[in-house]
Each structure stands twice: as C-alpha cells, then as structure tokens.
Amino acid sequence: RKEVEQDPGPFNVPEGATVAFNCTYSNSASQSFFWYRQDCRKEPKLLMSVYSSGNEDGRFTAQLNRASQYISLLIRDSKLSDSATYLCVVNTNDYKLSFGAGTTVTVRA
Amino acid sequence: IAGITQAPTSQILAAGRRMTLRCTQDMRHNAMYWYRQDLGLGLRLIHYSNTAGTTGKGEVPDGYSVSRANTDDFPLTLASAVPSQTSVYFCASSEEGGSTEAFFGQGTRLTVV
Image 1 (cartoon, each protein chain N blue to C red):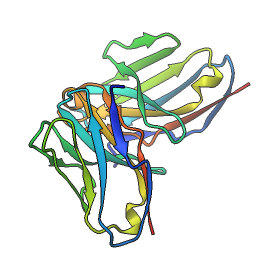
Image 2: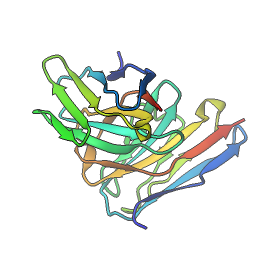
Image 3: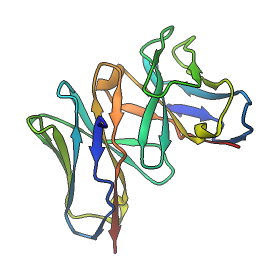
C-alpha cells in the first residue's frame, strides 16, 4: 500500500466553481501535512500547510481528519490560474516527506 | 537570487556512463533531498541529508550515491546509468527535516538511452 494516495483526477471545472479532493495516508504516526502545487514541467511549491484544526488561505481550505487518516483541499471560486497538479505531502518521520502522485485540476473559461 | 539551483537542466546520457547531477542552495538549510518524479508515481525519495557530513537512503536508492561535504552542495551520482533511471530529478532543501517547507530546484530531465 502506498504511504500517500490521491485521486489522480482530472477534475475539470468551470471558472467560479468549487472543487474539492482528498488524500489518504497510511502511517497513523504522521505529524505534518502539506499541500504543494506543481505546474506542468515545473518544480513543486508549497501551497499551504495543514493544521489539525483546519485552516484557510484565501480561496483555499485544508482539513485534516486524523481518525480517518485523510486530508482534504477545497478551492472556492476557481480561477484559470488554479489549473495545476496538487500534491498531498505527509511527513512520516523527522526527515522524510512522502508525496502523493498528485490530483490534476483544470479550470476552464 | 536566493534559492536552490540544479545543473544541468536536461541531459541525454548513454547507458553505462557515469553522471553527476549538481545541486546548490544558498539558504543555509540543514536538510537536503533528491527525488525522482515519474508519471503516475509521484515524487520518490532517493537520498537525503539531515546536515552536512551525513547522508541517508530514501525509498529508491539503488544505482545512486550522494555526498554532503558542506551545507550548500548535495550532488547526486549515477555510477553506471541504465534506461530505468530516465526521469525528472528534483533536488530540495528544508530548514529542518520534514516538518518544515521544502524548496525545490527547477529539476533535471535525464534521458538514458
């Protein structure tokens, strides 16, 4: 079983729509959680950290459910510029970040 | 410009040849990492270093070696390249291990023929 699993998508949504997707992780001892964004053929960049109580950053909301071992990302009022691959990242010990394969989101005009 | 730099950006390499991918950061980060990214598999950790002078194996270390002689540099060496090592390689650094933000280089596209 992979340490981090994501629905690969793609999620094709119109501008202004809300899109949400989850990621599951297998290690119950995981401590830190992140969403990274990766544009085509570019390096991943941190979108936001995910905190136990949930957190928002503008149009982006992240949630953590430790009991069910998943994290979620919700994007409100989607923009064309939100088109990207979103990587779920879990810190499984003090050095290792485990990456999901990514969820592709395409926002259409 | 502060950040993390990889070289080369792309390379076509004959099987059996030796190749070193270079990675340099100027953020004085303690931890550095090498990942490979393959379609459908996401990023997989090859080797890591928590601090200068120490290295460790990730989940796919076979065929690769690293060194960390100083804080800034973390080269990745393929001793004898094979076609299955065709991939996009990303170097990354973070201030302290996996609990802090990782910054990535722009990647090296390696094709082994």
